[in-house]
Length: 143
Image 1 (cartoon, rainbow, N blue to C red):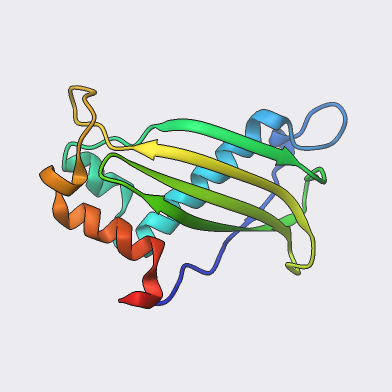
Image 2 (cartoon, rainbow, N blue to C red):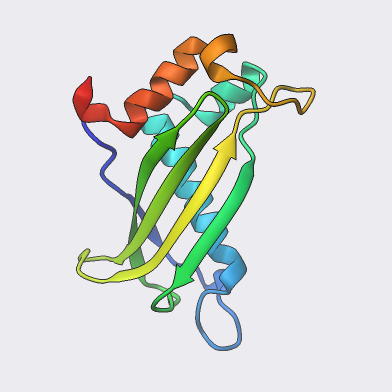
């Protein structure tokens, strides 16, 4: 399997603030869009996971604002699942300019799987096929 290449996105006017740059709260939404797209690329569409009774909340978010994103700009987001455990997985992100020459933003997120009762799920025990998919997403070249 090939690694997820990137998520491409144009910055919308409504995401900006009075200073003409993307408001800091909207960066998390860009990362979320990227994560959902990446999961679908690897055969785990979020709608299907919800039908299976799972939710994937954000547990942690850390960001470094290097260069502001502006209205009309095209960016490419490169995610990398760098750690998977039975209960959590971690993603790092780099947001590049359209030519992928400049890193404009970096971030990391941590996630878990919850069931419909909002209880944490050990994927390794309760859904080994999903756990294996996460491992694949973290290291697609190995499969």
